[in-house]
Amino acid sequence: MAESKSHLHHFRVWRGDDEKGDLVDYPVEVNEGEVVLDIIHRLQATEANDLAVRWNCKAGKCGSCSAEINGRPRLMCMTRMNTFAEDEVVTVTPLRTFPVIRDLVTDVSFNYTKAREIPSFQPPEGVEPGEYRMQQVDVERSQEFRKCIECYLCQNTCHVVRDHEENKEAFAGPRYLMRMAELDMHPLDAHGNRAVDAQEEHGLGMCNITKCCTEVCPEHIKITDNALIPMKERAVDRKYDPLVWLGSKIFKRSGA
Image (tube, rainbow, N blue to C red; front, side, top):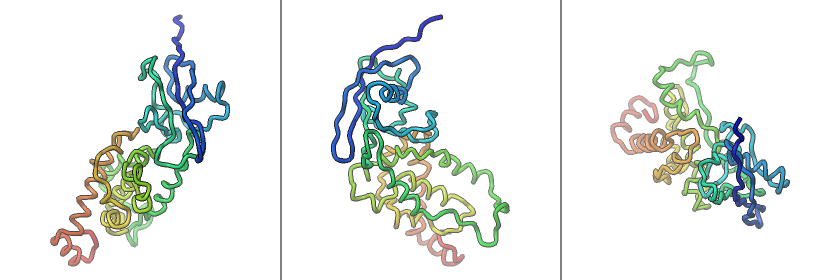
């Protein structure tokens, strides 16, 4: 039986808190088939017992182990070590957009605040739970967005907030604009005109569709093409198209 291959790899990990910190170099043993999170765990067990890191499932489904690996926002549990050359330095740093708590752990409460600002699904009046009926095509239309694991990589990489801290108050970020798009597509949602709300209250107009959020999504959700761009189009139609405006008045239905 052949022995599994192992080698020493040069890791550079950010250590510190919200006041100060620096990159620390570690030579770490890497075994065949391992991912970056395995190496972080080995560091905790050997050279850096107090290294702080979030993780839970180690299967790419909980979104907890988000970090920046060689400058790219990624899940540590889904980044395989065989994608790096043996002589390549692997640098692991916390998500840049959010305040550091300690080491690789960041304060992502910004996202919870934005989640609470999105009104939940509102069923039509007179329709009870269990009586909802939808066409399969309507189910499939927004099913893609339900795959989100809330790793916040899209929120982290979006330059609207990544490079402009002052935008955080007015901008919900791609994850929660996608949530609004999902509800706006729901044929039974009676909330009203979510596309216009997204533009006027949650910063949809600040998104300039560079697709950076789509590029880092571990679930391969086409956030920009399938959620944000169509919602921008609906917002413009509902707010500025005179025929749509007239129809909404005739049928007394906002956003018809």
